[in-house]
Length: 95
Length: 132
Image: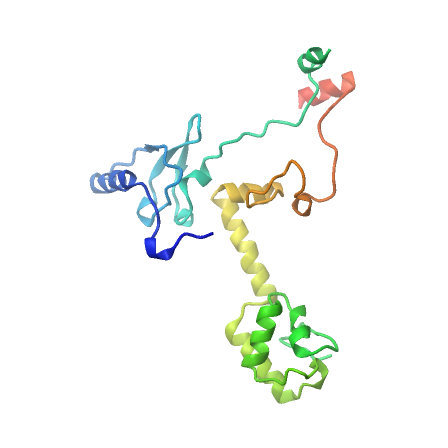
């Protein structure tokens, strides 16, 4: 279900402050954040975020197209390696 | 078989039902359109007069994105999701369910017919799989 329009987009207040600070000083360094639930606001465009994925920080450069999505959408939390290849190690364990 | 907006040729049914053969029109919209165009509900598509057809076409052109345009719009939205490398874009690229459904079982609409995957048994096959 979509969020009520009455409330407006959600974004971590601290994150907005950080972006504003950077906008004033023209600083382009990445913003480290754990707030995957924050929505990408128009002011975020052309900034780089380091979004936590539970383990490391993925660097995400915000473009105009990304506005309206959540930061977490750009920092995948799962890595798909490969489906069950029977390695020597795995086979040995079964015996 | 009347033609509406160039390509579509709905059949020998009542207008409300034949309209649904157009991509982008379902039950709800079909009913809405018939009302807007002021067409007798009981009439079949074949019985429509030329004037009624123009009225219908007018309504369709003014208020709705249909057929090719709609398909293009949908494809564009998907392309956008992929280009910004969002989670949903990735799911589209991999042909997996996009909205958080389980994939352990089900999801066959997106995944297509079952294919056995993994479990490489033979010794030679294993070394090949590893090399990849």
